[in-house]
Length: 326
Image (cartoon, rainbow, N blue to C red):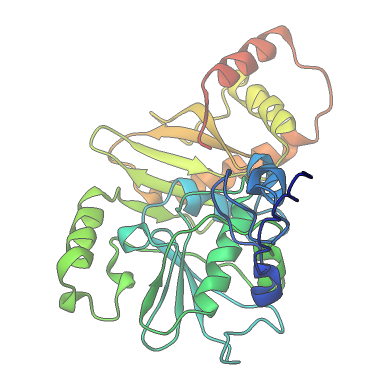
């Protein structure tokens, strides 16, 4: 007798034909595209590559790149109005107001308020290796969400648009720093349940922070032991470290009596010099010294001569005290 012909596996209807997207599923599950192969051997390869691909400077090309980094890593409570690029609308066709917020209640990626306006959370988990793509994905979900609803977290769709595609690159980026998180709600006094509890916890943990007006992307913060100035700079790291070493060796890196350049952070491709300040030094007290330091730094950045032996030792010490935040 001849062998029976093997039964063909039933063909699943392609999800792509219905939605135009390939949803993310388990690695061993059938790929939703209908190919009959497992997801990890089909469209999962593209998703895996997207997860591993790391964008060094996710906010490059956006207005206020240094402030984006500061609000992502250093500032507890702040908001910034955003302007959508031409042609970017909600599913209903309208153009809602969009506000960037450092963090949202319950760590929501975004929130569509009852009036249709959108809050986009900046301090959220990154799943793709490109924070700009993750935030753009949350924004697009918000544009398609019914008013009065939060946007749930999800794995970012590979190959999606980035913030640079969704936002108007000519619009100003002007952060407003808040003392608490009442901006979450139109009327914070009416908050109840988990949102009220989240608001109380967030307010209790917020470190007092103020933005300087005399220089770009510099933020004063107060802690119980000492105050600090953290200044996000877009100068290339190697060039900036050379300049800081020259100034520190010459005794010109401080911001006044009892202040000291103690090191720097590295965050999203930018360098963030940090100064220790005495407890009595306020943000207002930092304005003039910061502006004067900025002038000294600009002058030294143009010096292309080799570092001296002492300057190299100072530079090495600064590098040893660098902390990477992301």
